Image (tube, rainbow, N blue to C red; front, top):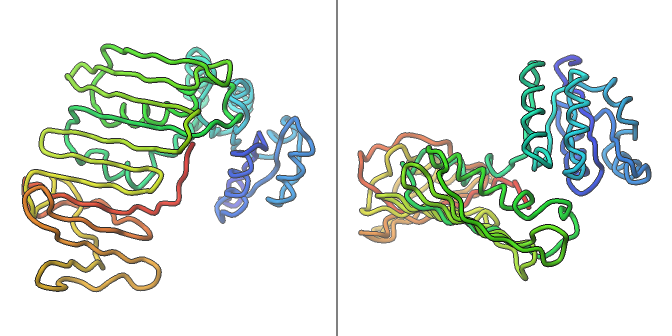
Length: 329
C-alpha cells in the first residue's frame, strides 16, 4: 500500500461495478486506480464518472493492492484467481463463484498466500442483522422471503445464487448447528435457470428454516421472521425496520441494547428520560402497553451500538428503524 491508502481496481463496469467504483473513489482510505471491462466504452463511461482510467486486467494488477470483482458470476473464478496469484487482496461480489469446487479453490489459494478474500454479502453488515445476531438466543424457526421483479441482470445464475444466497448466509450465521436435511423446489420461468425457488432446511439442533426466493414477482419484498423460545423478531430489509416482541414488558432481552443514549422515552405520563440527538440523528421510543407490547420506536441515523440490558432475563417488545443505507438485490 502507498501512504496507508489502499489502491483499488474494479473488474466489471456493470451495475454493481459502477457502484463499487464510486464508493472507492469517494473514500479517503482508498484510491481508485483503474477500471477493467471487456466493454471498453462502458469502462470509459464509469471511469469518467468515478475519475479513473480504463485499463486492461494485467495492467490493473500492476497498479493495485486490491481488486474488486464485480463481473458476471461465470467470470468470478478466473478474475479472482488471477488477482490472488498476483498477490492482490480480493473483494468478489456474490456468488463467490459458479461452482463449489471453484469457491473452495479460491479460498484455499487466498489462505495459502495470506491474502484477504471477501465475498460481498452486504446483508451481514445491515444494522437489522447486527441487532439480530446473537441477541435472540437459539432460533427455533426462521422464515425468509426475498422476491423482486424480473431483471435480465443476474440471470447467468439461478435465483438461489442470485437472491436466496443472502438469506442462506444470514440463517447459517443465526443458527449454530449443521444442516441435516434440505427439501427444495424451483423452476425456470423467464431465464434458463431457476427464477423461483423454495427451500426447507432442517438443522441438527431441531431448528427449521424456510426460504422463498423469486425474481419474477410483481413487487419487491425482503423480510425475515425469527421465532425463539422467549422472543420473536421481524426484519424488513427493504424498509430497514426491525420489530422485537417478548413475553413481558419493561425489560430487555438477554444481551440486547437499552434505549440509545440521546433518546427520549415517552409513556402515558408524558416525556421522561433524555433529550433527542442533536443534528440529523433523532430517536423516539414509545412505551405502548404491557404484556406483548412493551416498546415501539424509531431511530434515524446511525444505529445505537449494542449494549447490555439492565433488566435481567425479562423480555420486551420493540421496533427500531435502522437507516444504514445499505441495499442489496
